[in-house]
Image 1 (cartoon, rainbow, N blue to C red):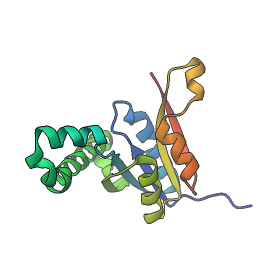
Image 2 (cartoon, rainbow, N blue to C red):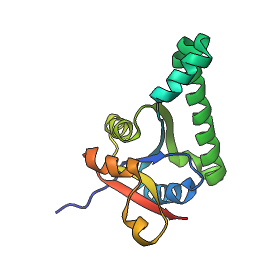
Image 3 (cartoon, helix red, strand yellow):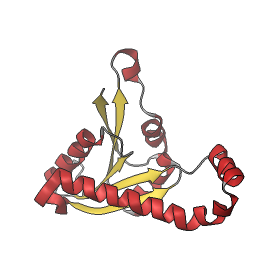
Length: 159
């Protein structure tokens, strides 16, 4: 029986206010295994209601939103992630080898990106409020566990 050695760890974040504890778990694992760490955020697509409102109130923006404005939004999110990990790690920021922001449905995009990057482990957070609510995972974490063909470490944060 061989013990898994993680060479690439994918940290998937929702960029929420409780991302630091989950990120610290990912960092600890990356340091322990001397693995490269990749940060990923998946921006969910604008739903039907949002697209209908955009089309109704700003029809001139419809075409550019899908291309230019979406690219600008993803680039701004990526800058936010880079600033976050530099703030968190300081001079040890080199442990993060890549930062990516993509658009799509989170669980599917996380798994697709993990496969593309040949990640050995996915680290993702979920929240818990204690009591009965603590037995439920966040919807992205739950879906990811079902679609992933690699280990997923779900790190809870307590409200």
